[in-house]
Image 1 (cartoon, rainbow, N blue to C red):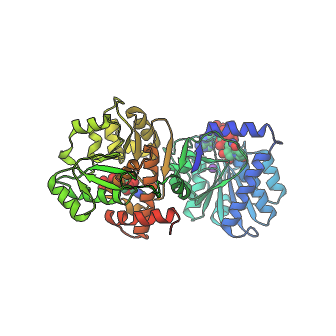
Image 2 (image 1 turned 90 degrees about the horizontal axis):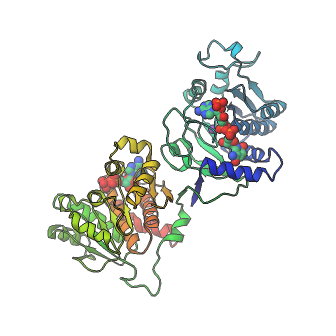
Image 3 (image 1 turned 90 degrees about the vertical axis):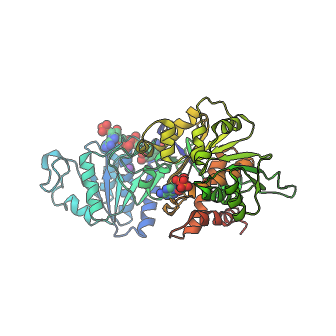
Length: 491
Ligand SMILES: NC(=O)C1=CN([C@@H]2O[C@H](COP(=O)(O)OP(=O)(O)OC[C@H]3O[C@@H](n4cnc5c(N)ncnc54)[C@H](OP(=O)(O)O)[C@@H]3O)[C@@H](O)[C@H]2O)[C@@H](O)CC1
Ligand SMILES: Nc1ncnc2c1ncn2[C@@H]1O[C@H](COP(=O)(O)OP(=O)(O)O)[C@@H](O)[C@H]1O
Ligand SMILES: [K+]
């Protein structure tokens, strides 16, 4: 897993470590990692043109000391101070290494600068716009974990010049302006080519929409000792640890039997597609329960299924169920000992009495909005908050689908999976996911593990099916086995 911690957790770990180290050690570790990442990105330091955007806090300090290191290696480094409180020792270090500093100086604002800025060019210096326009890279040290969401007008004006001239921006710790602990982006923020963070990931690196503004995230180890993570992102290696691989003693029953209630006269295809997803997972057998004509279609596509009720280890209910949904029956199953996955129409059977066994629900943003009685766009803007809220209110594990899929358990644990491709946003892809996650539940994984492994395999299969082009839901199901084999290293 890739772990992310909250700002409070990071500050506490930093305080513990700083008490044991000489002053400034952590910032030097951060700045060194940042300078190395920038030089690797540029491919060289000597002669590189680097502009630092420096705010009032230690995030600007990191940028200034990284600038010092790059200047000593022959880079032309210019710092633009966006506050008159910028890190003094960092400014002195950069200047001593030959870097240039454009101070914040309300007395001599250049005529070309937006009226709201307090930026000024020191005598004989190139104007700050020219420095940015000619830069190979701009370093965003405006704010870090101490920042409020949004950018002040002077910061926005400077960032806009970089954007207008296509200069890549490296975010120090995180793109300034995003909400660090929620991943929300309620106001203007930097969009980075890549981000260099320190000690641990922060939630904004893993959760959209902020995660999309980070680009690839490089983690620099500065030696922090951290408590359990607030949010974790599933990685390739986690599949090897969590996937229920059969062994010599396994039989078709012990591998898990899934009961599937999906499809209707209106949406027969959903049952066929969900079955494809389920059979591509770890189960030994699938029992399909539904209208005869749909069962016939499912059997025609998948002769290996068994139609009709029988003993199962988990239920997957809802994909394309339409009017076939029998709320009383689903509620009865929810009260049994057997774990249940609810998708699409099946979500209508959920109530918030909390009176049920292990449940995994797989809504998209619109379905989650309906469960919570809020607007879809509110859920899209605050995905982590609403996934957690629904998990707590309904006492179920919530898998919220999207470019980044969030899996929130009722005990507060959160995982994310972000390996999918936008080509996966296609009708029926959710049915494949429901079948696959149901299969993992039937094989004995917890709702949290089933949701995370299912979402990750689904994303990996979509990448194989897509190869950067269009795909169909059935093609995604068809690639789940190959994705599993590759991730389990059996290839
Ligand atoms: N913790 C660690 O382990 C380590 C931390 N390190 C580094 O320190 C960074 C945190 O530094 P920090 O605490 O000084 O906060 P930081 O974000 O630089 O500045 C906050 C100040 O900015 C201001 N401000 C707020 N919002 C604003 C906005 N939207 N737009 C403009 N200004 C805004 C506000 O001041 P105000 O405006 O209220 O006067 C506030 O006081 C961290 O991200 C990492 O890079 C590493 O060096 C080593 C290990
Ligand atoms: N922009 C995106 N990038 C990557 N994956 C996405 C994106 N949008 C949606 N998805 C994924 O595509 C699938 C769509 O599922 P869903 O909306 O339920 O479709 P359907 O109900 O038609 O099957 C989900 O797995 C979701 O996570
Ligand atoms: K930043």
